[in-house]
Length: 222
Image (tube, rainbow, N blue to C red; front, side):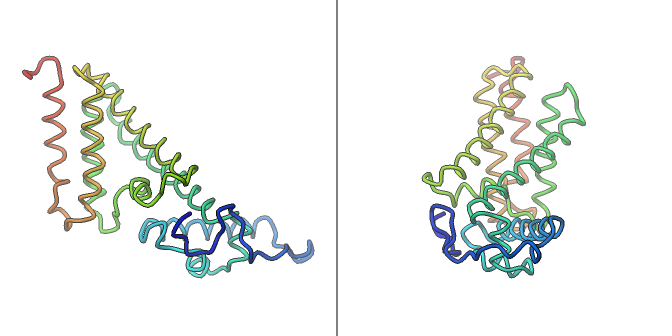
C-alpha cells in the first residue's frame, strides 16, 4: 500500500519477521486469538479515526499492547489487515441497513426514509467520521487491486439496493432515482466531516429525499 508507514513490501512480506518460536514456547491458540482480536480492534479504531495511511504497524502494535512480531503472526501484511478492516466495516454496515429496513416490511419508501433518518442520528454523534469505506476510497489507489475492488464492490451493492428499492416503489426511472439517493447518502457523510454537529447540509437530506421520491413516482407531476 502506497504511503504505508510500516515498511511493508508490495509482496506483503516484511523483512524483519523472525522465525516462529519452538512449539514448547509458542502461544496457545486461545492466546493467539486474543492477541489477534486486540490488534484488529485497535486497528479498526485507528483506521477510522486517522485514516488508513495515517496509521502504521508500529502504532497499531503499541496501542494494542503488542509488538510487530505478534502483528505479523496475526496478519501477513498491513494490506491484509486493511482488507479485514474493510470487510468488517461492510458487514457492520449491512447489519445496520438490514435492521433499519426490517422495521418497515413491504414499504420501500418508508425504508428509504428510515435509512436517512438513521444516518442523521449517527451523523449527530461526536464519534462519527463518515462512511469508513467511502473514506478508504479517497486513500486507496487503483493499483491496490484487492482493496479498491472491495470498496468498489461495496459501493456497487449500495447502488443496486437503492435502485431496487426505487424499482419497488415503481419509480419512473429507478436507476436515476437510486443514483440520486446514493449521492445524498454519501454526500451527507462527507459534509458531516466539514460542518459542526447539526449545522451542515446533512440536516436537509431527508426533505430532499422525500422531494426526490415524489418527483419520480408515476402519480406525481414531472
